[in-house]
Length: 157
Image 1 (cartoon, rainbow, N blue to C red):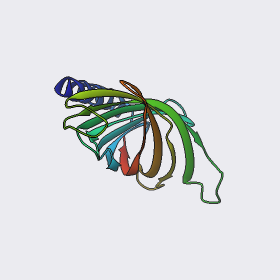
Image 2 (spheres, rainbow, N blue to C red):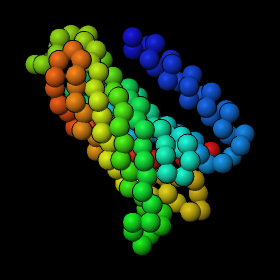
Image 3 (tube, rainbow, N blue to C red):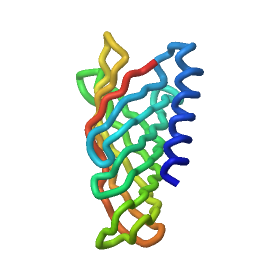
Image 4 (cartoon, rainbow, N blue to C red):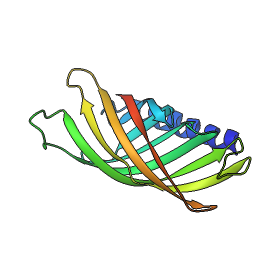
């Protein structure tokens, strides 16, 4: 499961970056996030306010985590126009590699995520720095609650 998920993530990222880099519209970004999970992240702007982001990496507890979210950005709330807030909804898949008090060994769980974040996009270079928190409600195989999120950076093509 882990290898298949990682392979699919990289195929999608490479396909999108190849297709979108030709247009050079700064709508597709790749970077990293430090937090839970820590790892690689990508974001695609559908239009100026709507985006889809995804990420993969080791989870703070154990195993690895794969997620995808739909995000809605709100601009011009601050005097600094480079800052935007965003809210969204998505899904996360957590592959637990070790025994944990709430999870058996090699268990896969599915979570509903509600990310909330703030992003700063530089004017001179296509780089976004973001900070987000994502409450996550696990609903498969049992009910549990986690707080995900982190600090990250993405370079846009």
